[in-house]
Image (cartoon, rainbow over all chains, first blue to last red; front, side, top):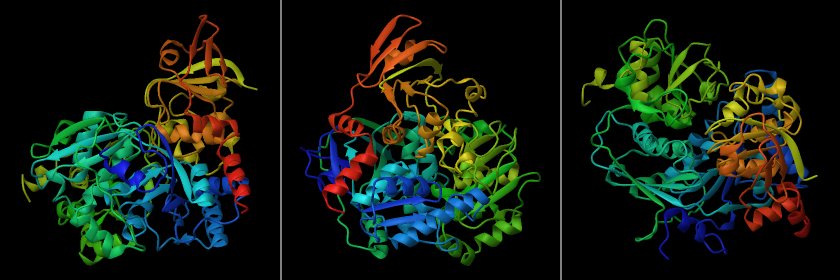
Length: 422
Length: 168
């Protein structure tokens, strides 16, 4: 029977019958956790009686959430994570060399087309931008993968999301995934794989694809996958740490649901408090005043994101009473942004630039909101209390929209700065 | 013991992991500590009023959001006996099984139960009885592999058994 992309990836790696709803045992190509999810994984690993991780080149610990260590309890968790990685001689990168895990790992060539990847973090689905079945699990599942090198997966039905038409220059991957979430809501893809398709994606830079795959989980998805093409394979071939075998969907594969988004007519979108599915055009939210802007995260902390933000911010000033926090998602991104003058543009405008970290995205540190405050963020979730006080609000937006909002002090459509084209 | 008895605490659709346990408290893995802050951003009265064995009742997509295993641990730590919902987000579903928090997927029960109803749940058979209203429901059965996993006591004993068999 013709297979969808996720079915093709599973079928290449299992002896079990690959039918939607069936549980398959699969090998795991890469398994990682962060400074919050590693300590419970270590406890489970010990309780399992496991002695060694299955392959030290395929198991990783990345301290990216509450780092640089924000307080004593966070420091203790990061220490426990580091000590376990040293004991196991597994992959580990220290603060100053790590990045937000979902930006850093693909950059370093550890997540590759056709892979099955488990991460103890829900945004592991970001790896789908490289045609990998990458999915988030809890710490105990991750510990089992570290111990055994395998896991179980229920074969998900696939939602095929087709993006058609040429993409206006002010539309980013973020607007495109928000357009899908507007259609399907926060559980429209529950238990499903999203397969991204359509001619609009051919010209979409990989950074935009990472943004889209990243937010598959916001629709309830297990993963969100792109079909391998020249852009993807070029990126993977340049960086790959090991051989890989890309997989492709078959013609005539059966999709559980199909949605089409007309990209040509899209406007810049935002998701309003308190749900990523609460989407409207940025212009309809222009009455919302803000006290903070956050540009960064595993969703939108890559070089194209900072490039877009810098184009708007360069030569302008951040609005009085607004703090604009920029956090490159990795040191590769940070270095590129320095070379290209983006960091200087942010600082001259009155923004703050911090070292790579998840930062305020999940309410950790580096930009926590007080009650009554509102933040335009390029991150992925705006649940109650996500970035601080349960009485604060988060508006999710693209880096272009976030940058424009930082200059005005209210939610702002980037076309008001850029014109219809730029 | 496979029977849980307690009051229902009913919430709506899309109860996310950030309200089950806010990230600012993710500096410990201790269920008791996590339990002190369970649901506080959604319902500040929950922790002070919940009694051992009480059950959370959710709508669709319960536990959506983050992969934090701290969410089912916080629910356990708060003393809850389990969660009944119309549907569960997939990572929460796996995590709950892995940490031994009973979960029951049953749209009819989740629809009809009201906050404060006295419930009795047979977790082995998946039978939910609403003692206040005199109704009873059968939750969706787990696939055979998951039943086997639950029968062994969860993922930790399952992996331990596999490692022992392979001589590691």
